[in-house]
Length: 154
Image (cartoon, rainbow, N blue to C red; front, side, top):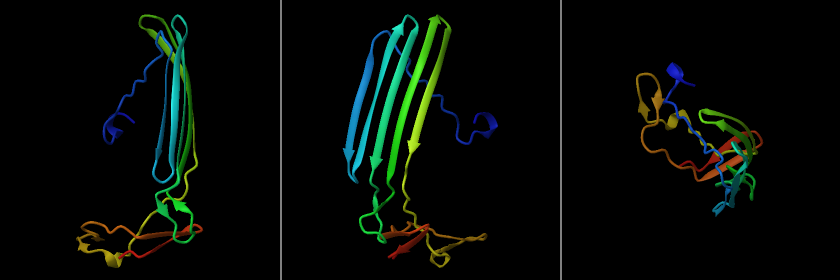
């Protein structure tokens, strides 16, 4: 959204176009909570003024929070597969065109969320009560079907 409706400004991202030589990169990351990430791309010229790019990314993390209701289940898990492709035409100076394709599939699990009762609010303003200060980190998360239950908030 641009103009008056822009909430925090606008960012124009200009992706690198294929050059005269073949370029590519592959990277992988392993981390805590069974995090696995693999990504790569290749960019190559096809003919004078014509280039193509292809890329892929796979991201998976088991979740940062243990589900107290279901031992062994994690909350906050994320899984993403992204595929990209593009054809870039630069037939003459000042003339360029491109067609890009992006496919992304997300299969995220339930996220951990914590709510506190209104009686725990300690900052009563003229409109409504709020919690003022540092919110306490829950020590346990549990999910029973579509309803969330929280224990040990103190």
